[in-house]
Length: 168
Image (cartoon, rainbow, N blue to C red; front, top):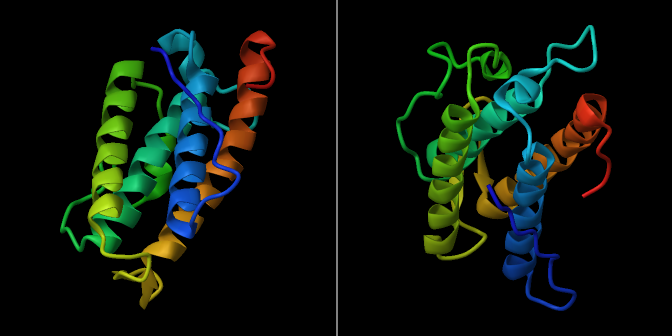
């Protein structure tokens, strides 16, 4: 798997900048997983945490699905790995494989990209049922960057514990 990570533009409009930063963070997660075996991706590297790189990929598939398809696009789709709506279930990658997790994640990223591209503006709104509030696409994109940035920090530590690789 080859992943290209392009730095966001230094001078661009709001939407292009948000889109580029989100793409950058998505690519960072993929790069953190590059070159590892399924076993290494499932390794829970920071006890007592059960978090793994593969669990992060699965979790981010759920997050992409929820914010773009369920919230902005109002699609009535369940979570991928939880019938009860529990995002934590995605973290359990003990029986997962790279192909299963990355296929789901890439599928949800493609849906998210399409939904964002087709939205008239960043002011398009959807309903976040957990909050009981309407939210803008702008907020969703910023929230997604926050999610990726936080979890990419986790991925840094997980990857270093697996094979000593740091930075990207």
